[in-house]
Length: 531
Image 1 (spheres, rainbow, N blue to C red):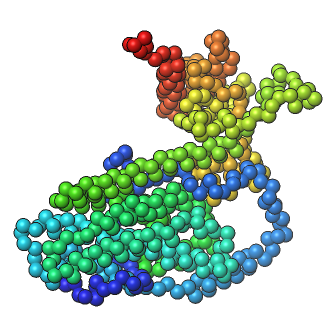
Image 2 (image 1 turned 45 degrees about the vertical axis):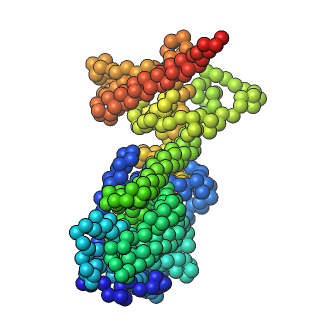
Image 3 (image 1 turned 90 degrees about the horizontal axis):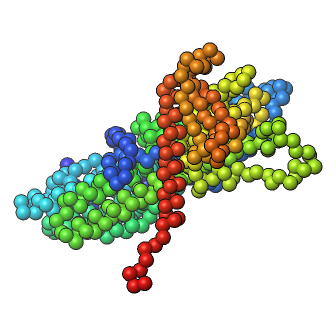
């Protein structure tokens, strides 16, 4: 299979092409600086939530459905689905085979050089470097043609077409595809630039001429390539969560099925395509490292290594941003979910006449539940034993205090947050509470970790009350007097042990941090020897 002139002609054509085989991918964690093929940055949070206001938990904007409003719904729904299918039948997807580099993505470097003489043995090192650059080029071709172009041409453009015909108008293109247009253009430019230098090398009179690839790597890896991938990755978790909420709809399901059945998808589903940019970003350092290892020129090695370090730093920055956004969004939801009752509602011993209640400043949870001040270490559902009943409670363990709340569900299920806007990092228990329009009401004031004591309760002492896997939490004041106590029951012995271990570790860490602050506060700078 020699390289014919038509394989390496002008770079101007921009139709499309798709792959003959499907490449497998590996999903791994990304610990620190280690980067492996197919690494996946999985964010529990989401960037696009910053652009969308939180819905009220008990929204009054949703009108109740009256029984008589259901008349004719079946016929209208069937007609709508039928019209949607007819509209989809008119969508035309062009072939992806028009790109000049389409026929090269599955070839080896040896196949490209078949029409040329073999390199002398003293230039085999140069060939190894060229093979490494060729691997970067062909993998970028596969990424562009098999994933980005499929997402853009089949999924995104089809959705745009449907929306111009007034179908799926409420589906947010950005929340689903983010900056896919920018990613596609950037990747195409990168492929074309690499294609150009490879074409010049192959067309040269002497195949021993080296590839001038440093300028291309510098331009794209120090430019828009990493930045556009960062923007996409920050939206990824929100996109997947949004997709799951959309799949519950019949009309979106028909659109999705139609797209995934296109032969150019080659049995890849939308979630598998959406994850491709994350996997690609984390594979770049390995490809660059491979080029660096096979380069002999010291100046080239320095340049390639610095570019690799730049990409790895971009990935580390992305991890930090994802974690920050996750934490920020989760705390925003906690501010909505957690209800802080006033003093007179929390404890009936404190009587405040209506005429004096204005004296008390309204307590705002924003200052307490702020992601800049604290971190949520652990959370979960437990059972609180009261004198006459058992109460379902939900505990939030922060890095400086413990909050005990009781979950309240709205049986009428009026309103409730839109599932598409719900934070993915919330636990299933909290998501269920939100969907039912419920809340978490604070039972008592926050318990500072330096005032908290946790004790295990032996089964012998509480079995008579029907309690199992029980432990006690005490809240002490500054004089070490117990001012509150919570007898809690876990579902299993393991959950009990986990909770006690988490609380004990949090107390230890908080105590150490406080001691460190005191030492730094009271430590005076050393006197100058000149005084």
